[in-house]
Picture 1 (cartoon, rainbow, N blue to C red):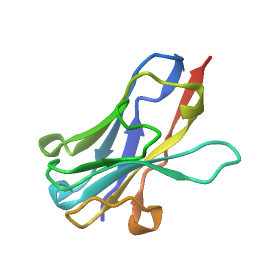
Picture 2 (picture 1 turned 120 degrees about the vertical axis):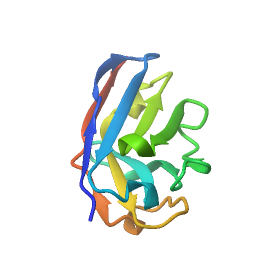
Picture 3 (picture 1 turned 90 degrees about the vertical axis):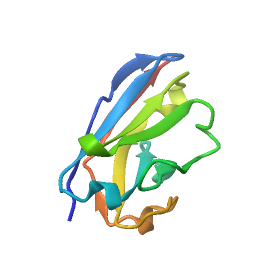
Length: 124
């Protein structure tokens, strides 16, 4: 079992940056693959980024590639999402997810553990 708590969301102007954090409970965080997903009002939840257990492999949605960076600090039980060059279409609730496997995973159904989410709003 792992519990996840996101933070770092907020209101930012287009072109700005935010860094989201996802703090995980438990002693085996380093054994979990992690992912970030987002859901905008009236839209389906979509994959944003994923990272494997030690951070050596990452994967991004095309819509955020070259703007967002996922990373993790296993000593702090935390995964991050650095978001640069934000656009109004990035507005959504961002949630982190965990799976007790080593690889990267891009589908929401592959993750059994989820945080509550943090709101990101990008104004034009």
